[in-house]
Structures are given as C-alpha cells and as structure tokens.
Amino acid sequence: MNTILKIVLTIGLFIVFQEISAQSKLIPSSEFETEIIDTLYSETLKEYREFWVKLPENYNPNSSVKYPVVYLLDGFSLKENLEEVYDNYWGHYLPHMILIGISNKTDRIRDLTTSQIKMRRGQAMDKETGGAENFTQFIEKELIPYIDNKYPTTPYRTLIGHSYAGLFTVNMLINHKHLFQNYIAIDPSLDWDNQKLLKEAKEKLRSENYEGKSLYVSLAAEQLHMWDEEITMENIMDDSSEFTLFARSIIDFSTFATSQKQSGLNVSWKVYNEDLHGTVPLPTMRDGLIFLFKWYQFKSPQKYNNPESTVEELVKLLEKQEEIYSTHFGYPFPPMIEELFSGYGYMNLQMGQPEKAFMFFKTNIDYYPNRASAYNSMADYYEAQGDFTNAIKQVKKAFEISGDDLYKKRIEELKGK
Image (cartoon, rainbow, N blue to C red; front, side):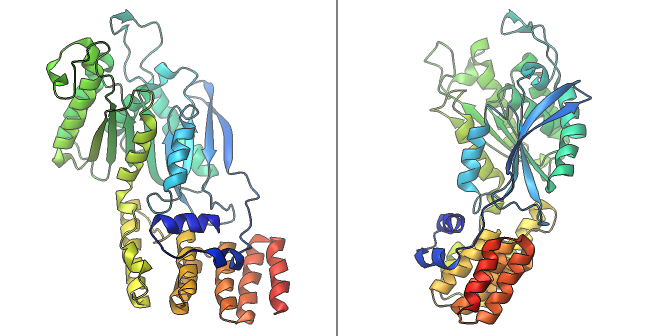
C-alpha cells in the first residue's frame, strides 16, 4: 500500500490509510527486472552504444498497458537527476513512463554538435565535431525501433539534453520534429559555430508549424560572465563579448521562440539565478517535466475528495479526464493510473461510501483487466461488505493472472470466514 498512499497524499486526500494496509496485504512484489543496462551495435556509428532502461513501478510483462517514453542524453551521468524527479512526481504530475538513458561517453562532442568547426572560443578544436545527424540516425533508425520492439512503448516521446546535448535537443526539435513530442534543453550550447543553429531555428520558427510540440529551456545564471560581476540579466544583452555569448544565445533563442505564436510551439523558459551549468539539470528536469505535462495534472481533485460528490458526478469527471489524456497522447489513455483508482476506492471504503468505492474498484478493472492487484482490491471491497463468495472469485482471478501463491493463501483464508 506504500505506493497507493504516496499517490493519494500528493493530491491532498485526508484519509489516513492505517486499516488499508491490513486489508490490501497481498500486492506482490515484482519478480522481474525493472532496471536494465543494455548495449546496441550501431551500423550508423560503427560502434556499440550503451544505454539503460527503467520500467515503471507498476510494469507487468503480462499486461497490455503501454507507456510514453523519456529519452535522456548523457544518460549515465544524469541518471540520478531524472530518477529523482520522476520518482517524486509520477502519479498526479506525470504519467507512468519508461525512462531511457543514452550514453554519450564514447565521443560526446562528435555525437552532439550540429556542425563541424575548427576553432572554439579562440582555441583550436582538436576533437571531431558535427556528428549530430549521424547520432540522430542512430536514435531514429536503430535505438527507437529496438526499444519499441522490446518494451511496451507508445509514440509519445520526450527528449532531454544538457549543454551540448541541449544543443542537440533543440536541433531535434527544429530539424527532426517528427521523432519527439516534448523537448527539454538544459543550458543548451546555442553559441556553437557562431550561433549557426540559433539562426536556422529563427527561420524555421517563423515559417514552419510546430503544433503539438512543447519545449522547455533553462539558463543557469549564477555566472553569466566568467570574470565581470557587473554583468547581470538586466544588461547582458548589451554586452558583445565572447564571455557572454553562451548566455546571450539562450536568451535570444528563448525570447524569440516565445514570440512566435504562429508556430504553434508550446514553449517556456526560465533563468535559474542560483544555479551553475553543472547544477541546473536537476531543477530544470523538475520544472520542465511539470511544464510539459501540465495538461496531465489531475483536474478537480477536491471533487474526488468531497464526500458530497455523487457517483454520477465522479463518472463524468473520469470521462472528461480520459478525453484530455487521449487527446494529448493521441491514443486512448485511462483517466487514472491503477494506484489512484485503488486509492480512491479504499478512501471511500474508509468514509463509509461503498457505492463510490465499488465504482472506483470496478473502473480500475475495466481499464486494467490484466492487473492482479486490481482484482485483489475488488476482493477487499467484497470482503468489507461481508460478501466472501465474490471476494474469493476476485482473488481467484488475481491468482489466474499472476500465479502468485500469496493469492492462493488468501483464497484459503477467505474460505475460512
């Protein structure tokens, strides 16, 4: 019940679930791996590329449920940042998603930069550059098909990149917008190659349609100028030195993108005054994902919590929520995750409103018919009503789905009541 308690508390429910833990004691732990490190050989890059996969907490290989996907560049160095945000915000703010972290440690600058250069900030560039198009081909033609074939994914994808990977992320939006719906560019290196991509982005944002795409951009402003403390956000655009080009490029791009309403791009950006380039990924991921999925955040939680709300009112709210989700995702999507359905069901049992509890438990089964825990929750409902015959039927169904001996044991306990 820890998961259900966590989810329910995030939306302000006021019932304490001491008795629920005793009732729903048979939600089994996972018996399959949910965090995997994998390697794929790329014919495009002519090398192996390592990546990690984190499956949702409620993942079940026997279920038909599919998930949106987040792709994180520099995936191993930023893994903990993304996991920290996701683990704390899924449920009310974020849907269950599959997280993918792509390694860029082989040749990071080559992979992520969008054009070839010989000089960088007054010094000779002795590394290979301009490999972004090849790396894009690897992601599009090899990695995404591999992930989609192996895991229960949907086409709703989010891309996150920091610094050079932020440059790459903006390039994906501007030049390969068919691959992802959402983009988070963290302190992106838009000064690259005399702002070449920035200039290209302005032309495309003026003329092309980015309807259905969302972008969040951040700027770490703790050190806008390497040695001049007089440079601030108020006067930085008046400076023309190389030292402020990085920040000025982000500001220029972000303000321009925001102004181009006709492009259809849903864009937001934020200056993180207390952060450095190396600390800004964590707060950006939090704010960025909440912005990108603002439409996902649960509507009218007060009405779900209000004991005066009728079953009919709640059903209409669920129908509206499903419509919102399905419209944004582009495919049918349940109005609640399984944990929320169960949480509201148990809350209403505690409040002495069995009709509402039944509705939530039954709807949970309707949307998640392959989840043993959904049937187990319905069994809790029937047991609370003293209907042990139907409680046993529900636990038998849970056992048929999962084969878990805990359910078998519970059947025997119910038969003895």
